[in-house]
Image (cartoon, rainbow, N blue to C red; front, side):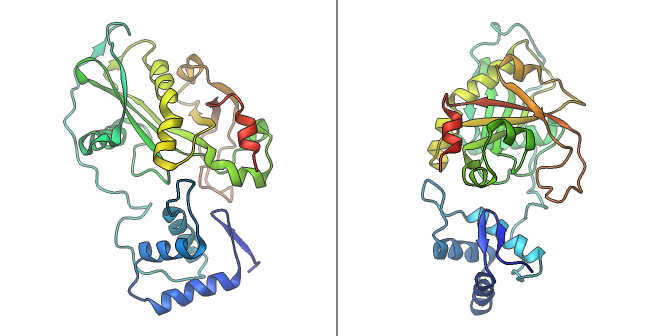
Length: 290
């Protein structure tokens, strides 16, 4: 084993891993959540809003276990590979086929303002998006798109940026070190869904624009920092990215045909176009900041 290891942006020495093993031995009744919280406190590993980086720490622990360096207690809740059960929700499926002006007012709502809204979001994306839905990884914002009379039209999900993207990183012009430090200033539009019975010209580009106008402030309110740049990856075997172009996004390149979590070039997925939208005029200065 070559030390130190770099996992989740942290450098781990052999001594650090031995300390984790010692905690597991000393406190055999701790579950994974308790262990990750204690380690975050010990390392003072926090998000910009001061909250513990609990999810990042749990991912770090899973990766250490996958390398056979530690043995974690059994999971008490579904992990990333075992998505939670999403219950069906009653949805108005009456066709919406009209001009955009006939649809107004169109509103973008934070799906977490109520349990029912979030259940609706989860069900719609799982049921009607071609990538389905389990649970987002890390920080994320969920939005529902409503038309007149509270008619649900679609959903938008923004989550963690891709760890690496050669064309994106070259376009930004940052080093690997700065990317690792500032990646949290980028988020990814990982799901965009207009329901299959909704056919309204210009709705998609309007919804994107309306979501982006509030995204950075919403992200800051929830996670303590603003977003400088939004990215998305469009599967060109299915879509042309027309709505992103209409919403003034910029196409900057293509992916290499690897999944977001693939560090070893083994998982082959369709090549996708990379689109970006700056949320700050000086976004490069912000992303270069050390």
